[in-house]
Length: 114
Image 1 (spheres, rainbow, N blue to C red):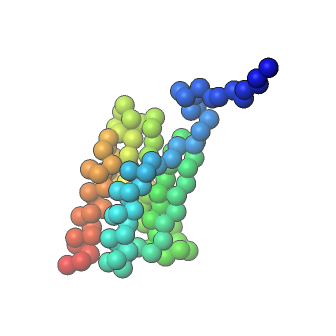
Image 2: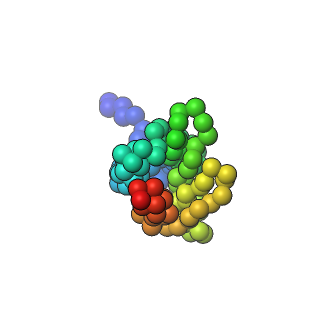
Image 3: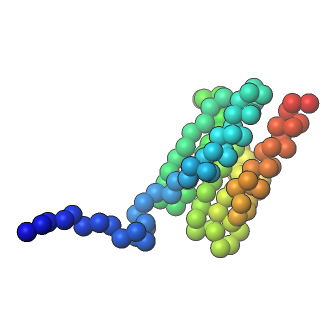
């Protein structure tokens, strides 16, 4: 008699936290690296919660994040699941494509280098 452990149903991800996938992190960390090289950013933090994944960007370790890049899958059908949020909580850009949403930060890098 063989006893097999039950395998979870692949569509049952209700209890898993939301996380950034490897291609998403690659885009975010590429942008982060350019800002670090320019001397603008120095630290980051990643949070994977039940409803949202957050990549927080800091100028110094002991302060509030300058920007938060959020992934909210429940917003996919509405305004888009990706958002860049400023220090004051204002949504700077929201959309369906992460690369397009991150352009709002790339413009700040061009100004910082000038």
